[in-house]
Length: 412
Image: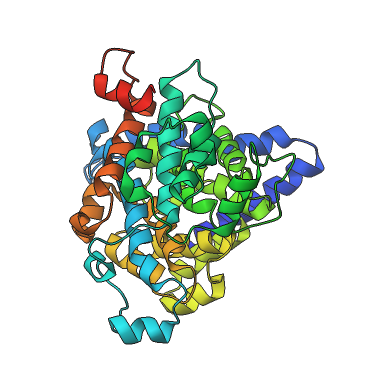
């Protein structure tokens, strides 16, 4: 029944897109894709029709029961992504025979098995610098800065300090020596930042790469978006696409990143409206539909499904594998992450994306129940960035002089 509904949804999307393009009614399709109007309708439907067996009305709080609060979702998203990254980092590129031969029939299972502490890779490093830069921008309205500056500082932690030497450091996390390590950064990211003054754009692509280094950092763009009404999800998708284009020029890398950014934003702001994770997804491309379909087909094993979707080295495959694991095991964070990393492909990237999605959906508490966060490198910094991003986006940035710690971190 659920699969049939997903198929109907995909068919409806395809037909609507085709008819919109044929008749030139692109606004109709844009409005449908936005999903905001649909979410508001669902809100009122739940308020009015959520009756018990006696037909009595349930209160508004019943809708929220069991759903994590927004701060928990912020923390869950970034911590969950880091957990998936760290668990997958030791087994990235290993054959499946090697993984299961070393760690047992379930593969690597705990952060302690990954190391003491379990190390994050360049995926989480870049995510943290992107998050730091997003907070910095919201704290300095009169300063023209872009995420590109944060990536230039990240490049400094990788040994190329030319930009920091010339401009100084604005990111407080740059001072943390734990970030000054080469952790298998994607070559496309390194080369794009080294060789460009301002990065690529949607109109002027920097290259034709569709590596997954875009999607592994896209979730933080969704977290940085403040709900502002009608075109919210459309704008977040564009934000994610523009950010991806800084380092990767292929359309699939750009669109995959935009999709994840918009979906994370929808989970954060509208997640309480949905009963299942995939209901919160913004309209998705064909490979995501395939991932969801496979997640429902219990006759297909986890590994077989992952092999059908790819290995995760390119953006759309990494995203699809992560979606498959997150949807199939959406009530079991530990299982979802373990499945997402124990394969022969780009394990830490697929693990990071799965952790971002499911962490945003389930919240920090479920992440901490599944894995001992004391074993995670930079857990303190990751949680601080999540908390400060929440404050900057969902609450209010402290006025200058109001919070000395904030000023020291974000008004340099």
